[in-house]
Structures are given as C-alpha cells and as structure tokens.
Length: 410
Image (cartoon, rainbow, N blue to C red):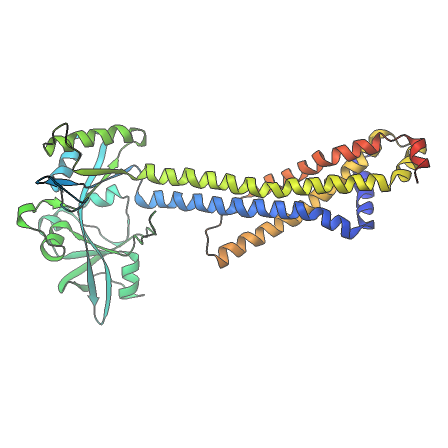
C-alpha cells in the first residue's frame, strides 16, 4: 500500500469520528499557533533593538561628566561639567582608532514659529556630530565650520519639531525663536526614531555649539570650553575595547588624575548596551518558544492516546485486512499516516491561528511583530515530527497484532 492510498484510508477513518479527530488536533493547533505568535513577538523585539543600534550610530562611545570630589565631599554624577571641547579634539587628534569625536551641549527651550510653539530639546553641536551619529539630512544643509566659528544663528530641525511647528509647510529659510532669539532654519534632519530608553530622538533642534553657549544653553566664563557630552565614532567595531582604554588613559592624563583617584568622567559603550538587550531578547524568544512547544508535546500525547484507542476499536478490521493479504508494514503505514495527517491538518490550522494571533497582538497591544517564513516552516515541520514520533508506537502495536486473535476480538 502506497502513502497516498494510506492517506485516503486515514482521512476516511478520521471522518468517521469528526469530533474526536478535531479534539485530538486541538493540542497541535494551539501549539503551532503559540510557537508562531511567540517567535514573532521575540523576532519583533530583536528587530526593534537592531533599529535602535542603527539609530544611535554604529561603533559609538559616549563620554559624560562623572563624579567630582570637592573638600572631601563627593558630588553627584554630572553635577559639574568635567569634560571639554579640547578633550574631544585631543581624542580625535591623538587616537588613530577614532574616526570622529564630537562635543555637544544640551538644554531645553520653548520654540516659537508664528502663533505656534513647541517645547523641545536644543543641542549645540559641531559638524563632526553628524559623522559620529551617522545622522543624515532629509532636506537642506548641515552646519559647516564657519557656522560654529562665527556663532551664526542657524538651526536644524528634527522631524518631530518640523511636523509640530510647520506641518506640511517647507521650513527651510523660515525664522523661529528659541528663548526669544531668532534662528534661521537651514535644514531638516533625517528620521531617527526612539532610542533604547524610549526617547524620541527626532524631538530636537540642533544649533552650532558656540551659538548654543552664547544664546540658548548658556555657560560660565570660568568653564567656557565645558561640554555636556562627547560622542565618538570608532573606525572598527573590533577595536571598541582597545579604543575605550586609550580614551580613558588620555582623559585621565589630561585631567591630571592620580592612580588612586577615580575617573571624573563616564565612558558608555552604547553598542555593548544594546547588544546585551539583543541577547536578552533572543533568550526571551527561545524561552517563549520552549513554553509554547509544550503545547505541541501535549498535543502529541493526545494523538498517541487516540491512536491507541483507535487500534483497540479497529482490532477486528486489522485482523480482516491481514487475513486478505495486508502485511504488517501496510498496517503500520496506515496508522502512521493517520497520525501524521492529524498533525499536519492541525499544523495548517495552527499556522492560520498563529498569523491571526500575531496580527491581533500587533494591532491591539501595539507590539512590534515580525513573522518569518522560517518560524512557520519549523513549527509545521515540528508538528509533523510530533505526529510521526507519537504515532509510531500505536502503529507498531497495530502492525504486530496476530491476525487470528484479531479476528476473534470482541
């Protein structure tokens, strides 16, 4: 008996007890649907982390002000600006592994255009900032060294700010007021989206750093060169650790720190932070898939149970088939095909359930979902494997029956 003939016989046998067959498939349906949904959620989380890594810029190191001890009292992190523009230029000049080092200052302000206003972040930056952050322009031009040297009152708008102040109107060449100071819009930044901490990176206005210090953020004359952060782009991702150590040694030397003194700055390797999040999301995906796979195992046990009952109910039929010439492998094939058919039908329904469940979670919970063909194929293949594994014992038991005893069975 070939497989196709066995499949036809199996389907006829399953149609005799439709409700029992449907309940038997339920475990496989739920298992396959749960696996696809959970893997889609995990894959969506991984894709989101990958987007965050790309939005921050690859091979990024950020330097922030650290703790300072004054008169025996340790001040809080960032309470004093301990890094300067000169630190950034020294890093870029003296460490060959660094492609760009960009100092920046940061503040908040109410921005006004006509009768509209918007509260946003204002950052003072240099042209190197856009190289370090891999931030492109959507429209207009970026800053040039002359804008920074001359403290020119020009501004670049993030996508969120441009939308809230100008809507569909072209902002290029328009005048906006930041803390009552007029600025000319010369460009619109490309979209970045949210960062790893959920902040909207597009809700920002960039101005030349010299202009920001004089007109927006302010600063004391005693620390005119102080900055809030330094963004660093490393040439090669494989040298991140080495570059980090060279930066630390250079800054400790420049800040005249003794060996027993702590760093008065913080180094943050953003790629490592986000890669740790990615690894955690991968573990979560595997955990969710493992939990969902339990349903497949339960469904397989249900198939074995029903197939054993079917063998008992159809003992006389098996004996009759053997009496007219059916061999043991024919009986084995028949019952094994029945088990696999149950699994495959349940797997197909489970795929539809998983796709609907993934869509529902994306729509109602607003989660990022990424359904891959690989997860569908793996879930479907696993369902078939469950049918073969759990259907083999009942099929073997049926094939091993004695024809004479089977015919006598009441």
